[in-house]
Image (cartoon, rainbow, N blue to C red; front, side, top):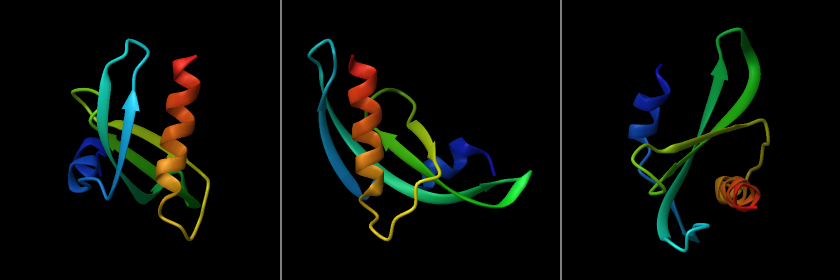
Length: 85
C-alpha cells in the first residue's frame, strides 16, 4: 500500500499544539498505524502520521513498540523538538 493512501485513512486520534521556529502555531492531529516492509515482513514497525504541520502529513517510521497508543505523540514531540534546534 502507498504511504499517502494509508495516511489518509488515519485522521488523528490525538491532538498536539506546537509552535514552529518562526512562531507559527500548529494544531496537529496524530495517529499511529502498524506497518511492515516488504523485504522484512517479520519486523514490526509503527508509522506515525501527523497532519497539520504542512500541506502533506508528516510520516515518521519507528521500531518503538508500546501498549500505549500515545507513543505516537511522544515520537512526534521528540522529532519536532530535535528539528527545532
